[in-house]
Image 1 (cartoon, helix red, strand yellow):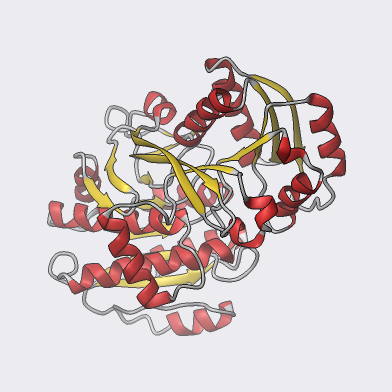
Image 2 (cartoon, rainbow, N blue to C red):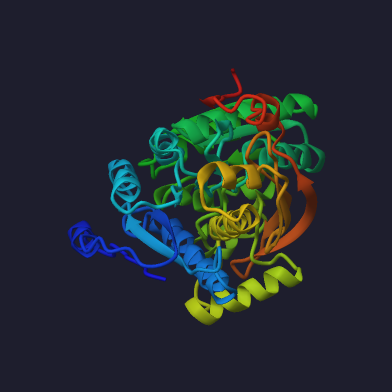
Length: 402
């Protein structure tokens, strides 16, 4: 396996790749945010890919040959995704691409891979709705996470909900789903606030929350500044009478950064927590810690990438080919994989995973206690909107309004 990383400098990356000599094996591309503000996610995504490839290669690779990885650092810049996706496809001749964290990065990549006709794996929790013949989503969608979280929240805390979310697609579309699932479960949204990522003073929002008197808050903070919301919420004494739930708390190890006072009792919904108890996760954690150490908990996005690489390798070996049409047919045949987060299966219509969804509570040790496990949860909205077997030409990002 040949791995090319652009650690600090894109110039160094370009120089490294200019060798241009292919080696035996099947080449895949990886574009993650190894530097910049999103590297708390990107480093673990890339680590998971490297670890998965090492495991697959140790067991014979694909088609009897080792997988070769061509890796790029997007540096937390959207323009780098389009630049490196084109380079990986046109120059490096990759046969599959694993890339992206934000929805904007996914939407920048999708037209490129669609034109090139190569499988693309997006491995991050997201607001849902991506539908494309060559795109496969291994993270959990809002129709999986939010549906279970709001159902649980209304049942546990009461019907009145306040939304605090970032003012871009993830926040606004997720908020729409809060409204949807609140209505379905007898709940009511009594207030909402959409804030720029740069906000660090949440006093006005806290005042609105106090005035609205919700039973619980759906908090979807993103970025280092926004984790301050959790500290200020606790400092204001609101945790004593108002629940707080989230679909992305812990996705970047926020539970390690916040104080025990702020983190204890926060409810998170995700497709994976490091505390999941099964044999596959125990083995995965053991391998991860042997290679990367024990200082940082494993985030859900890392497992999403691990699952993506293994599903692609299974499809290539099943198809006995790395050609796109054969691989997609194999992926759509109903592949399953015993993953760290439990058994996952690929839905042929939507190209999303049916997977477990966990409800967990933050504890005083900067970790989580799993409260409820919902098994084999489908991406209902995506399967309803998107039938790529029947309509392979469909390429759209559906929103709840559509």
